[in-house]
Amino acid sequence: MQQSNTYIIVYSAVLTIILGLLLSGSAQVLGPWQQEAIALDKKKQILGAVISAEEIAAMSPEDVNAFYSSRISSTVVDITGKEVTTEGVSAEKVEIAKDYKKAAEERAYPIFIYHAEGKPDQVESYIFPMYGAGLWDAIWGYLALDTDLNTIKGITLAHAAETPGLGARITEAKVQGRYVNKKIFDESGSLVTVMMQKGENKDYSSDPHKVDGMSGATITGNGVNNMLKAYMGCYEAYIKAKSAPKVVAVL
Amino acid sequence: MSAETIEKSVAVKPAEPLLSKRRRKLITDPLIDDNPVTVQVLGICSSLAVTTQMQPTLVMAISVIFVVALSNFAISLMRNTIPARVRIIVQLAVVATLVTIVSEILKAFAYDMYKELSVFIGLIITNCIVMGRLEAFAMGNKPYDSMLDGFGSALGYSWIILTVAFFRELWGSGAVFGIPVFQYVSSLFGPDFKLATNGLMVTPVGAFIILGLIVWVQRTKTGYVEH
Image (cartoon, rainbow over all chains, first blue to last red):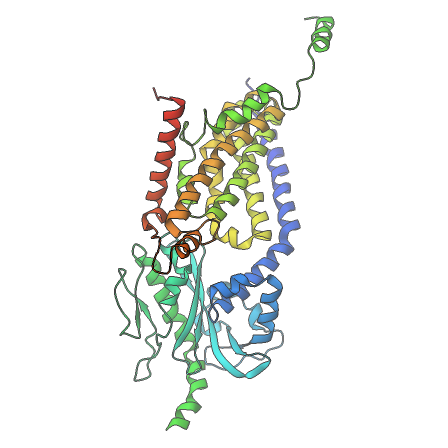
């Protein structure tokens, strides 16, 4: 059966319109649920930096929301460490992915503070969002620092499209656990962060600034390293300002 | 042909039952004798990639069933209008739309699964089973039959990947659907007894081995030989 060119063109156009309507319709209808799922996932990632993945997996979505609102407070700072108090700015609304494209000085830097239940002054750890590039696409994560603002309490890492079984392993608890108790400042107080090494199954327990790598995923590992270094550099002013009074007290 | 004879033939021929023997065969044939994975060797890539655990595999299986059955149905409905010269593009457009809808639904209601499977769900578009059934069956058969055919083929694919996933999760992680079976079994034999897991099963190599074994067992039983 041979149809005329006009038939083919009209057919394709009509089909495109129908399928397009179907797609935009489903996106419209499902949109609110998707937004909710994404917001919940973000909270889970933030909490993942301070509590274990099993604990989060055991929580229902309502539990996660309740836990989040009773234990996390947040603030937004700029690169100089000064709090941004402009009306309408809230840490949850800052889109790190969008800000990533701006110059470092122009970004807003949200900080999530994990505190004792109902007592925002009793800080247990500070959680810093990060964003960067992996091998194929974006990677991001949340780094939790202890109250000394030096020791890592936990990290969550996530990715858009790293290779399953290789770079995608950054989401595994085993890989993320390697960062716990490492330090981001060296003894002289300069920022060195923590570097994931090439190769796997080596022992870096004696070095507070190195962690074991992921075999076959060195580029993703480097991406994580660059992300940590870049974002901790941006948060350095805030961290220094926050930890300075304590240093004086010790002296 | 006169109008009279048409009426006559319609009157003589009784309506085929919804699940007649021929239609049942459309579903059951691809399960063993004409299995898309083990006999036709289609859709191997995704059966290697998603089968490390039962749960994502089940979601993948349901998604493939949905996409193959519905795309077969839709293409069969349109089969007499599709311009021959752009038929592959039309098929792809329909399949891609269905796959995107599946992925959107997962994103809304099973976000964790969506994150884990997003790449593979998208790749259903290129799963040879989908295009294969569209070209081989839906373009020349009625909608209901085509839907059954797609359903059968996808079911044949599903039970294979679920079997592979069962053995891979059991031997690789010592669990089934995330339930730590090995741990329970070990504890029955005393505190010092521990069933070991095999790391090979977690890698795609493990899927190749299990798949090869299934093909071997099946072909020994059915006597199927490749020419």
